[in-house]
Amino acid sequence: MSGHSKWATIKHKKGGKDAARGKLFAKLIRQVEVAARSGGSDLDSNATLRTMYQKARDASVPLDTIERAIKRGSGELEGVIYESITYEGYAPSGVAVLIEVLSDNRNRIGAEMRSVMKKAGGSIAEPGAVAWQFERKGVINVSRSAEEDDVMMAALEAGAEDIVDEGDTWRVTCAATDLAAVVAALGDAGITVESTDTTMLPQNTIALETVDAAKSVLRVIDALDDLDDVQDVYANFDIPDEILQKVDL
Image (cartoon, rainbow, N blue to C red):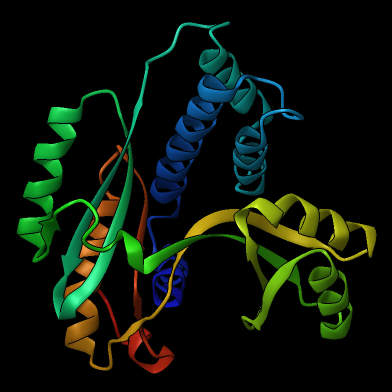
């Protein structure tokens, strides 16, 4: 999963920033709308909406755009009804892939998913085949201006499970249900939180130690990411920095 995150950052830096930004905005807006539809428009009582709202704000989605998405979801404005669907599959090297989709047409996205996976070198698996390898977690990226001991003390007392040095930030991991509490504790300690998210983390990872192996897996991930209905792609691979820097798809 760390390999996937690092690849997303490098790909963004290599080019197509405006296109990538527009696609990200569209996905986040859809997530906000669905969260509002399922749990109401009140941020205080709808934890999922609160998380998606903050995720959109962290990505610099304009506030009025987020508010319109909430109104569409709550029924104040007319909107499309999206269905949440999870697909499971495999990329080359036995890498497990979990794909979260929001779509207004199950038949269309199902056909697109199978076509894209086949063309990119992956395959769709039966439900339950790979989902057991992932756990829902909260992830908080904290400014490196904070001392590690200060981050650790505030975060662990609030329920954090792990703190990792990611170079530019400290990455704090916790149970998804503890996300709000850990964020609040960090804020109370005067520590700058740069972004928060809920994600699916793999219990174990597969190391891709050649450029060819990395390319073959990333080709599948990129193809899935490019589908408009796909919201998140999770995979259990890790790519060493020296290999990832050589990848150019």
